[in-house]
Amino acid sequence: MRVLVTGGAGFIGSHIVAALASRGHEAVVLDVLLPAAHATVPDRPPPGTAEFLRDDVRDAEAVARALRGIDAVCHQAAMVGLGKDFADAPAYAGCNDLGTAVLLAEMARAGVRHLVLAASMVVYGEGRYDCPRHGRVAPGPRSAADLAAGRFEPPCPRCGAALLPGLVDEDTPADPRNVYAATKLAQEHLASAWARSTGGRAAGLRYHNVYGPGMPRDTPYAGVASFFRSSLARGQAPRVFEDGGQRRDFVHVTDIAAANVAALEAVAARPPGSYRAYNAGSGTPHTVGEMAAALADASGGPAPRVTGEFRLGDVRHITASSARLRAELGWRPRVGFTDGMADFARAPQRAADGAGAR
Ligand SMILES: NC(=O)c1ccc[n+]([C@@H]2O[C@H](COP(=O)([O-])OP(=O)(O)OC[C@H]3O[C@@H](n4cnc5c(N)ncnc54)[C@H](O)[C@@H]3O)[C@@H](O)[C@H]2O)c1
Ligand SMILES: [Zn+2]
Image (cartoon, rainbow, N blue to C red):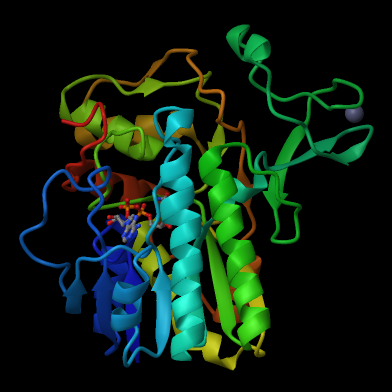
């Protein structure tokens, strides 16, 4: 299969390119090498790349050229992270939503009917919560006053009781809490509308917190694992926000690459006109504090420092069930938390150009 991997020079995309090549597929990479993600232009394309196109997904002519001879598209290109402030919103909406719309319009025109989309668990907002009295509830965004007072756990919106966090499934209503999350949700709606109107077949993988070799260094656009890893690389203690009890699902980048290959190989067999979302996580939640400790241990660096700082756009707990991905695509995560973090603690990171990067 000849696959167009948008964002194929990025962290996850480059692992997908390698995984495709190892399965005998050809990967054509289209990536504009966004400065927020790449401080310098890499001197060669990711290993396994059949053809590299330094182009923007918002450029219809470039996308049309890239789609020639393509069997399926694996759409990874996006601006990621929380960004610096709201002034980043047009850039997020441009890369993520205008870019996706341009790509899908050109796929419609070119008759390319198979799509795998990099979606995200951020679309859920907070994870699943159960109140002992009221059953399943959906707490709203946490207030700045609560966070500043160290009240990090969202209470039951009906009675204020402490809640039990659980696993979300794909049918949980979306509740995006920041610009990035809103643009990731719009990508899924666009993909679904494209499938319906063209008879295309699409799968969206809602990745959890992906980590592993090649992850960008600390920038406003990067994930928490890279902040900790960068601090340790400087010999500093990782600064853990809130009380460190935030639960996440950290999933290794090679497992996410394998999920993409499985989805690309299976998408042709889906009913025409359909979009199917899959949670993609390890299935073994850990707290952010545990992750910082695992990285500090593995690198022999200073123990994490819990600071009580917070970011308004962050959610408290988000962990999902990946049972659908396992059942329908036969996918299994292979890299466990301890081994994966130990390996990541020693792996090289990629320089990126966001403020705070070094
Ligand atoms: N890293 C995670 O934990 C995570 C979690 C959930 C979802 N995702 C999604 O996975 C995908 C890949 O993310 P990543 O972590 O590898 O990020 P990344 O920044 O390393 O890679 C994204 C790539 O897309 C490229 N890109 C951005 N805008 C582009 C444009 N307009 N035209 C062409 N190329 C463009 C960038 O240059 C970069 O190489 C994204 O869609 C992201 O939303 C990532
Ligand atoms: Zn209650």
